[in-house]
Length: 128
Image (cartoon, rainbow, N blue to C red; front, side, top):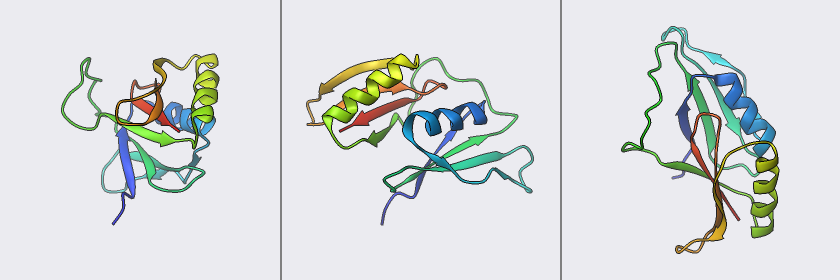
């Protein structure tokens, strides 16, 4: 058994797809528009090292973003292979005006990580 994909709702599908392609090397599959759920559109994104995919989804009736964390998924973690790669990607993202929420560091559970936000405010842990 393995995780096939993680799905994320967004108000701006193209903006979020472009963000993950540009900064994380994701490759987008074809745009999918549901015939049975009017307005539902999504993309599946694959990452260079394989593994689970990210599904980006939108609906015209999607509610507003909540201002505070709620129960549910907290973040996505993307491994870049080494602490040096974490440092380098964090600096590239900072230079591209991507919010860095937590600087690169060794965490208590043994990860070397930094945390950034995607354009919708979703937390992305970059691990090495």
